[in-house]
Image (tube, rainbow, N blue to C red; front, side, top):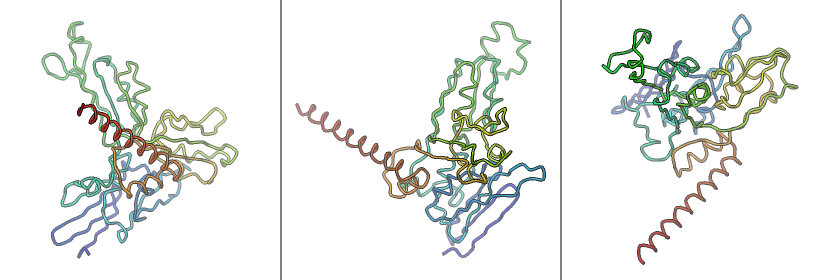
Length: 311
């Protein structure tokens, strides 16, 4: 048992700490990056995470749900860190993010499949940087002399052609909403979502005039207000994080179902249980069967090639 346990709740962060004789475990929640979603809550094997609905602001705007940690239950396993789609949680051991759940292959990494081909970029375009709802994209331009280019009007036609575009995406914080991909006029960005699923708003169950889900949705355009002043869904950009579900006042007004998680290969009982909670038993079973079929296929292929080599 730790001889010192600390919990510090500040405006921009929440810190939990275990201090042992030779080890120090620390969990840091960045409240600015946290969107109040459901993923860490469902992934936590110790039920150490709670979701608290907050009061609305004086002007009636809903606030994102508050994520809290029970220090008496948390064992600093790092599963919340691994599964957070927004990179809002950081768990360290003696200052290093060498998480046991990853180093021991007991848990997978979420895959942020983001591909960028800057050769296709219009050298003066900054659409992806502008539309990113989390400000995770930064575009830099350099001339043939290696110096930053800020004003294209001073360049000759040849100089403009020689400009090199550097597109930096903070992938560790990207929830893969694909907004930049669809807004990129040159098709230079390709993204595959980490979470797949379905989301539906039952207009008959929505309270009149309510737009709480729209107030807290972190992705611009995933939810939008129609001409009839009702909230609608654009699933092209939805990350299925559940921030909207956490603030919805009516249980049946917003139906969210996560069906698939994009992750690195792993065979683990801990992950199987987490996957059931994040998606559902039926959807988890589908993935288990798909993984089993893939493993069998791989085994058959190995045997086939082994027999071929013997001949």
